[in-house]
Image (cartoon, rainbow, N blue to C red; front, side, top):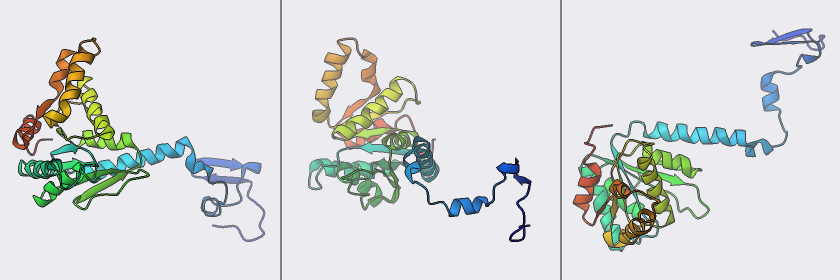
Length: 252
C-alpha cells in the first residue's frame, strides 16, 4: 500500500529479493524510473545492447523457420537480369526443388534469388527470403511468401545453413562467394553435418575450381579431398538430384 502524501520515508524497503535501508531506500517506483527516464540515448549503441539485438535476430529467425521442413538454399547474383538465361534457369530450379519436396531459401533479393523464389512460388511451394539490411538493398522480392530481414550477415548465414539440407550456387559475385566458402568451410571442418553443395554453371565456376586445384591444393593449402565437397552441374534435373540425394523429403 502506498504511503500517504507527505508521510515520512520508510527506513526499510523490500523490492523483490532486494533489501534497502536508510539512505539506500528509493523514493520512486521501478515503473516511474522507467517511464520518466529522459537521459542519454547512447546506451542503444553499446555492445551489451547490440548483443540483445543479435539475440533477438536469432530468436526471430529460428522462430520463423523452425517448422519449415526440408529445404534447399539457393545462392546467386542480385544482378542477374530477368531476360537472361540464368534467370530462366533459376526459375526452373526453384520449381524443380519444390516438385522434389523441398522448400526454397534465398537471400530474398532480386536477380537469381528472385528467380528461384519465383519458381518455388509458382510451383505452390514455400518460398523463403532471408533479407539483409544494406544501404542499397532493394527489399524482399514479390515471390517470397515467408521472409525474415536481418541486420547482421552472420545471423543470416547461420539461418541459411541451419535450415537447409543442401546448397545450389548459381553464378554470383562477392556475396555469393562469401556464402559458398562459408558452407564449404563448415563442411570441411565438420562444424556441420555434411550436406551437398552444387555449383551450377560449369563455364562460370570452372576457373575458380581450377584455381583451387592448381594453386590451393598444389601449394598444400588445401587437401585434394576438398574437391569432393562440391559438385559441378549444367543441368537442373541433375543439380536437384545431386543436392537432394543425401536427404529425402520429410527428413530433418
